[in-house]
Length: 180
Ligand SMILES: [Zn+2]
View 1 (cartoon, rainbow, N blue to C red):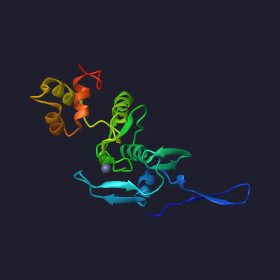
View 2: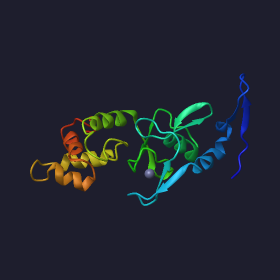
View 3: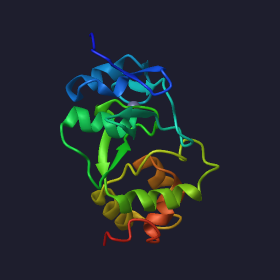
View 4: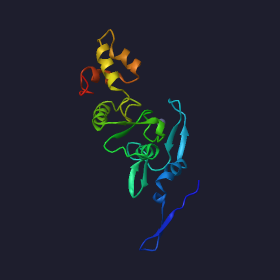
């Protein structure tokens, strides 16, 4: 795939290639040139961004004069509509991944609750990034099934593939408070 890059000459005479001038329809393909295809737990591989990353590990890229998270931009380009107020979350819990198949939209409050729980779980490997994987149906099911010591948080954590702290927080309404 070939792109036409626009070249801007700054006042100091330095020519700069404006990579973000690649048209919207082509930009995702342009991003393919900067991915590492990595097989992880998902059925399809992760596309890890090889360019800049922010402190939390998310890829960042300039597009139309703005810095975007690569996951958010990939979602926008692949789906064709802007995520707006919604957060683009990772099913694969892999922040640098921008494979649109691994991305889904969550609400800001889901993400804030998720972030709040994550801050208490920083020492738990694999849980310090990404967004909530559970649905409201899962949350209701967890609350229905949870019985301390019998159907304990450890049992449910395994079943729903989340941490036991997450189960505890859901059962005690520290998370997903908006779900009855
Ligand atoms: Zn992924």
